[in-house]
Every structure is written in C-alpha cells, then in structure tokens.
Image (cartoon, rainbow, N blue to C red; front, side, top):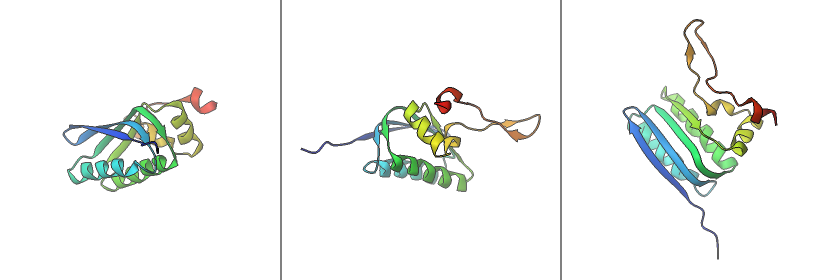
Length: 127
C-alpha cells in the first residue's frame, strides 16, 4: 500500500501581511498547495509573506524550488517572502545552494542606508 504524503497549510492574515504555517512534507507531490496559497495571497493584496517552517518535517529540492519561485513572484509585486524556524537540514540546504537569503528579512540600517542581515546562523552554516 502506498504511503500518502501530506502537507497541511494554515494562513493567518494581518492586513497586507500573512503567516503561512507548513506542517508535514513539502515535496513534488505537495508543492502545488503552497504555490496556490501564495498566489491567492498576492491576488488578494498581501505583500509580506512569512512562512513558518517549525512543523515542516521534510523538504526536498522541489520544495526549495517553490520557495525560490514564490519569492521571485512576490518580489515582482514589490512584496517580500521570508522563511522562519527552519530545521537544521533545511538551513544547510539553503546554505549549500546559496539561497540562505530566504531565511531572514533584511531591514534597512538607517544610519548608512545599507541592508544588513537580521539573523545569522554561523554555527549551522560552518558545519
């Protein structure tokens, strides 16, 4: 009997911001759910999308690809997408692929007008 993979998504809106919580497995069979939810958010005028990964048990390369695709789509409407609470495995995948910019929002430093990282994971990235 085949094992059914599942992904549960929960969306919590706050004006033009939302948090999408993922629970389960993000892979080739489930990425369409996340893509559809982000598309709905953008269509409804949401411009800041935070994705809570604390309950995500698994993410493969198709999950990484959908994160990159929805981040690009969000940027085209002058929005932002940020991943929060990833497990060490996903942090490592993002570091190895040079896509760690998805992990944190980059607030503007008022004194110099430059962008600086809000969060750094040196211990995990060094391993």
